[in-house]
Image (cartoon, rainbow, N blue to C red; front, side):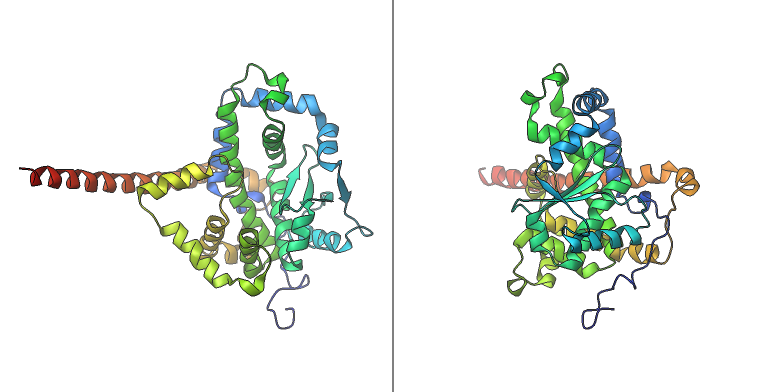
Length: 333
């Protein structure tokens, strides 16, 4: 442990030998991805976008104004990236780039050989422990095979339909909405990967706090933020539920409070500790033999629970409205 912090050092972090991405993937991530693939025209759109830009073109788009991280450039980030890959037992360390922008973000892009781009705003805002969380999050996207579809999503959102004339004839709005839904759910998966890579729950939650409120920790309190996250998850009637859905439709990331609550629930349910204890799916034969029925069941339950909660709230609101109307009508007699 690092003296006085209780934060694991690189030597004390457990190497998750041959861990498979399916071990941490959120069931809604897998369900949403299957839904995207089923949207008419999606596969055709992906093929056309990849065919137009190609692997080299995509790399040039995202690397044009960036500095490649290595032993001589951003050596601290290089060391942290190496640590993260070691912890996750991932042999092909992705290329890492830093690009100049104050927006706090990072991303995993590419096709055959995914790479990671971290914005200078994130590199400046986060401390070493938090950067390890962020890099582990992005490595999670790489290990899950998210980079291709995330690249397609960013290209569609950044360039716009009007600048992609080769997609003429494809109805893109359903594809865009489906991709955004999956993109958000994939973030929940990689939040778990960031925790596993850092093995530091406090730093993981602190990342959400800083993403939400900036970097002045002297003015912020993590416990108060986690309470806010619990309140957001539990609060609201039917109108709040509708607003939550509408507010998310055009976003690529879930709200930071929601992400914090989701990750905390995953920890509280014991998944994190069990994985540190070696209870996870391994890459290779074990991963291939893993029954898909369990994933489908978990995903269906996740969406069913969300729908049930919303319907329940709407039903209760309708009952109250009907009762108020009846009382008002009786009062007029």
